[in-house]
Image (tube, rainbow, N blue to C red; front, top):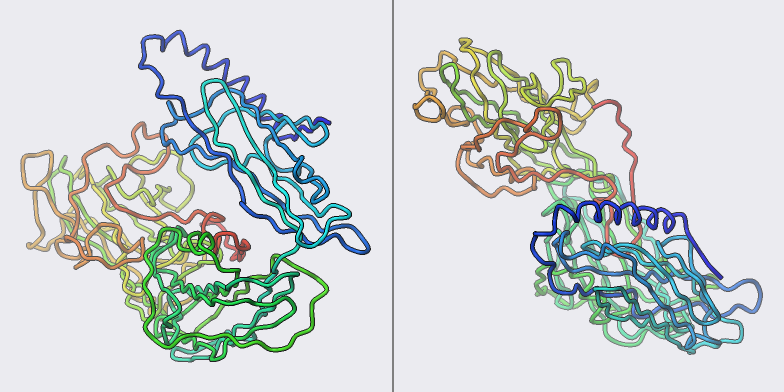
Length: 575
């Protein structure tokens, strides 16, 4: 049986095209450096997959076994496989235990014969890639406790592969988390208990339990427990300081059909910085691999309070085993506000000079603002360039638009710029935006606006900000202020420094605000010399060194590795 997915067909065609291109390019690269050592790739996937037992009536429930290939190289020239490779599957040791078929996802072009399959694909680039997804279910006649293995190997000319073996078993623990009826409309200072409760709906006991508690910045637990470890690292979700994570371990055997509840429920509280916040709670069987996966390389420290304990209560065995119900979550809205106060800058210079300025806004709190669910920007800084000046370089998060805010293909020397925040802004953030300007002609007192507003251009009000009067500031060139620094980087004078009279204060233009931190730096910035976006035909501005995180939609709404994907559609019109 031969199975060819549309994706496989496309990648095979792309491989042929790529080969032709490489052959054509080879006539120009014969004298180039030799390729690196033979690349090594690693086949992988879940080490263990548990299946629901074969039912007395009806069809067996399928599980998905996702297989991957990892290329550890970061070099796209010498660390890739740009030819075809062959993957071999051996299902013989699953006979009588599990039935396996190829799912619709994955890029392999396969031909199966009995208990083996030979598959082909083209190209392996740096990073982790999906190899195939297998649909696996308990075989008729299998019994609870039966196990078997699936072996995967691969080969290609000029490359080596590390083989992979997956263990498949029938039955096992199935921990199901109960959803809690928590209050979601809060005021700062409100607190409530969190009586975590779960049931083992599986066929066997769980040996040890790992409880994960994750809350965003506006919520906190009133105690840190000694059998939990805590971290406030990002864990790869793109918004530093937004999440706090607790991993709590409970040794022992947790029986099938039994329900367990925390003997003394922890208390969660809305802090003075709370606004939109989320809380996630998850249970899994404990183990070294589970803990390592959830730690994700972050720094954790143990709590010093009392120990959390679980107590058993009688429960009725569930007839519906659901492997996706280990996790629950809740969103809170706290009656609070955040004051985004814009600031501008002043500089002086002669015609032909370049000057550096820093504009932006500070969050004066008390709330932090995070759109963690949707991953959307919190706000936009809308900057109008003063008359007689043009922008040479600025942050990569800014895009040039026309004077009336419409799309502009040529990013060079635009009259107006929209600069996006990330999906969260801390309560102490300084969102500093350094720009390098060229004074094309001297216009005394030339002034532009700096406005922090909603991302919806036609509805600029920030819904959480009760003080709109300070959302606007000025960017002034060659004003009457005798204290402004003069000079220019191209005329032999001293370089004008952004922030000299109205810049970024005690938090420099390091982009720390956009990353959610409040680490201090120097006032203003010296920027980098350059001419904007290169050919001036489009793309981002030349970077001045600002470290600004750009919200990336779906990539930032994953709340926990291996968990469900959550999105919230906060619809907006033209930005």
